[in-house]
Length: 514
Image 1 (tube, one colour):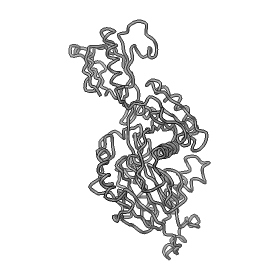
Image 2 (tube, helix red, strand yellow; image 1 turned 45 degrees about the vertical axis):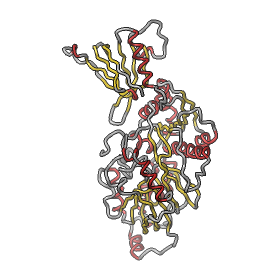
Image 3 (tube, rainbow, N blue to C red; image 1 turned 120 degrees about the vertical axis):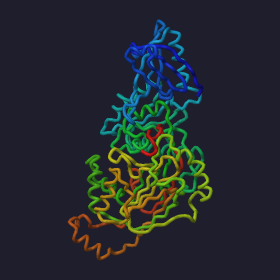
Image 4 (tube, rainbow, N blue to C red; image 1 turned 180 degrees about the horizontal axis):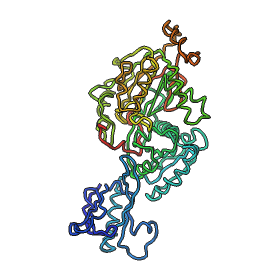
């Protein structure tokens, strides 16, 4: 980006201010000679967070100005809180019309440089049933005006059935778009994810169903306007579930690469996911909640309560290819934040690992853990949400080519509750003797299909339990919860595909230690 150096005395809300454009930042401060007066409204905005600059005041935007104007207005991102963004407008009064016009031209040139990453045309999918039916209203009232302000053209499609968005992406011409946006929840995002990844591999001549295939990264970025019952992906990549904040990340063209996990069964691709792949507790909760869909989002709490009481454990063997400890560690307290060095430096390190391990499928360095598990969770990101600010694995990274494998061994109900409770507190949920965590590139799970009889201790415990009626008919295998979708199979393998997609986001702003 070409850097400019400009400065001039102007007036802002009646105050004389020194306005400076330098080092890709617009600053305005009270002029030194006016220090005897009350200080004016000073400010500083990175140029890449300016949305628009135009001649005239706010009321004159989009209107033709018949006489030369000495005023110009700048719309920019402003932070209301640590993660919440809003739009603010500042009107400057220049010494003359020529100066005002020069500033507007210069700012617009910096906002839209050659090779700019800001989108010009977006394909928008709205789930009209998302957010209890409010998704359409959210887009119409809050998001569409912002896109119009930024001069972004949109093609809007309201979905009418399951996989409508996925099928559209698979069949239609996408060359004219700079990105795809979903207005809805995690289910809507999953449709876009599957559509884009599958379309990209098909256009590249790659067989995505082959577990050994190195998949091609998607060109189009995905934008998420949160308007669903669950918005885990948005929360974990932006830090807040706020439609306006997400729209502003899209407008200024932020880019956040992201790893994608692929799940396979019997050498066949089952699903892609970015958040949770869970067996045992989370799989059972999802399966049980399907019987209670009439309850709405409350069904997850009811199902979760029931599964805690049942306290089921499943036998099997987990095999995994662990990442090098010197690479990153799930217990190192380093959070994935904007500009994360672990993610940015991961490409070269991961290339070396993949070459050494022959694409991580035939390596003899796999580790093995056998036993009975209450929960087996694989998460490619923190999986944070408003109810669990740190998520399942607080230090998981978005784009380092790894996922975190969390094994909760068989334990009593109260010990498992202790582990779950730590997801909503600052305590280390892994600092328990029956919980272990590993940072991995790939994993396999083989269930124990032998219907072994329960031990005498188990039988006595169940007969004495006040929940014994709930425990009847316990299945010998669970199902997998794959980003909110049920996989009706117990034996699977999972592989992490490095930076397979890109989001309109920049990661959670903050320090890596927070």
